[in-house]
Length: 187
Picture (tube, rainbow, N blue to C red):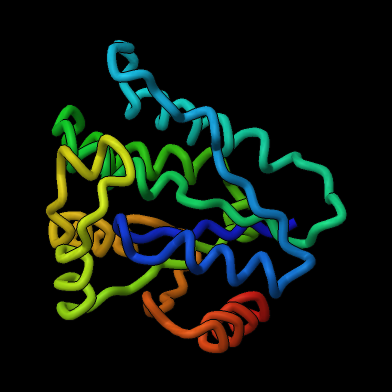
């Protein structure tokens, strides 16, 4: 089984892209970590839980049995921990987060060859569109909306990570997404 991790800044169209992929690829199982919801008064650090989740995934996904699906699609992964651990709370330094990425990939070991990160690329026009959206989907939209900072942090990751990275333009048509994804699956 191959793992595909869809990454990109907030509001870059990940959910839109995933809906198109789910409709068009029957050999794809979509996984969304639904246990990451928090009650506002709860004193749990989402970054600490994300780090623990990343390390757990790195261990159990290596030994997962092949299911009916050929591909397991994740909405975000350990790259997001790197970006948002720094972006929102500044609790973790760039050095801490870089070590985290390397540790996760070290645990994956050779299984890293079965993982592809698909990064949704945005340009200046896309960033302006994102900034103009009046949408407060969750607590993060209220607390931090520096999309250029998020994109800058994501842009550092191909220099740190050993995983195969594929870029896909954000906010594209269904046919673009389907064709691009076919190319990614073949590579």
